[in-house]
Image 1: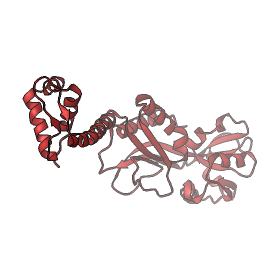
Image 2 (image 1 turned 45 degrees about the vertical axis):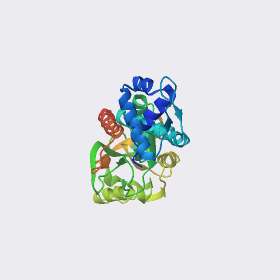
Image 3 (image 1 turned 60 degrees about the horizontal axis):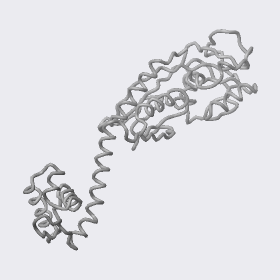
Image 4 (image 1 turned 30 degrees about the vertical axis):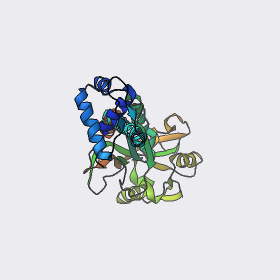
Length: 294
């Protein structure tokens, strides 16, 4: 059936107002326009939806009209909900799915989430940890520590140098040459994290430390350094997001030369970004620009 929502809205107005004339005044239509719309509705459903007694007497709904009315109210409510959802989406109050990883989740992402929620209290933010070699899939945005292949766009948010974390007093103050880490006991992250990339950077500098323990958690790694199991090489964001700088048991040293990773934010190139996603990209860029690395 070729039923239009405006015809259903007119039917409801006629029923609630009692006459075609009062329904027209409510909707801003002439009485003849109301009659034409009800006639179009009745043609679509194949029968009369109102009994018209004429004169000032109110119209009465027919059995067929009652069936149509039952579904009309539901359809009109869903149409209103759709219109509201579209307006909320355009205003930035939609849903956004973001893929993230440990360092970003500790330092950059909380500020992004807080500002989005402050600006758009009705928005729905979904976060998920990304696996090694992630794919953007159904995500709107994806943070990762290197550019990803595929039909994606990205922005490099910040350069994130790696630092050496040792126990206080293990080394004199100042930078540490990478080659000094050769054959030293080290606490590292899993190969699925930055460790493979870091191992390569160390090897190129002539250093092959002994990895005595691995963990994907930065806090666990730091706990093992505090316990004296070994030193650790961690990115600046990981150190910044922990309590290392206020822990008198630990010391932070720059590395020379300093291995550095990039922090990237990706999004699908072929998709039209929602206003919320566009705003999240801008906020993340602003937050990264305010981060003082060092």
